[in-house]
Length: 373
Ligand SMILES: *Cc1c(COP(=O)(O)O)cnc(C)c1O
Image (cartoon, rainbow, N blue to C red):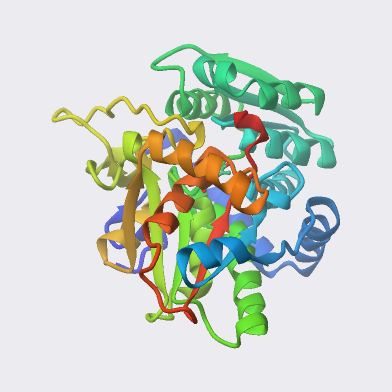
């Protein structure tokens, strides 16, 4: 199939008919901005001078000694806002401006995307309504407060389980109610086309930088790239630069208590065909990951495709393993990773002694963990 809506059999636009014009408008703008040099210059100016790119590729010396090979961290935690989310938020805000939108609606779980979207909205002078599950507001108080201070509105979502997927549904409804004025700034590589493609496009800067940096530091490509995720925005962000290098092993780590790959199956969820945790009736199942940002039942279409085709291998980390990795990273490296990022770290720790001393592993350090304290 050569339909851009699909990655293999995954993706598509499973939405009510009246949404097609809005998706078409987005598609049109997306094709334009890829070629628009003024847009690109402004996007990269904000990435560099506002967000803080390029992020360092850090040689983690003590972790390297512990694992027995060369371990590098791609430091997305150093970005303004504390995670990779700002890359996508800035790109989509500039698209929203081009479309003449005045208002952003979005969803957030750990609050990292809500913070990033609000920051970007304030940079561009747009208003921002952030839908957040009541359970997530409770456990990610710091980010909920930040969103308000940065000029956004936190809108509590009580329906369903009061978590990320419920917030996604509510944000979609808010978007549909006011299409002419509103852009839905989706936070991960999920939803109907072109959303997953747009998010992956704005996040690919992570891998573009990492590839140049590792060639500069080591003179060779990594043996393994490890990333955590749910929808897959930070993982695709770094993986894209290595997709065609079949010797580079791409490793994706999800939450064991929200294991859309390990325990899920193919199904339609929130506008696209994905891997999703579902029951026999096609209803999504309850997830209980402690990492709010990974507590989502579906995996995005491109990631689903890459896993199905065998290019990306998947693993799962449990809540307990994640908390142990969190504590260990503080002592080992003086770093405070997000609980989401700790999933990737768990998988790295499990590979202690498995590699040769000269092998290079890059771990995408997706965010910082102040929010989780
Ligand atoms: C949101 C988030 C994730 C998971 O989202 P993906 O779209 O799958 O990358 C991972 N790490 C951090 C720090 C996050 O904020």
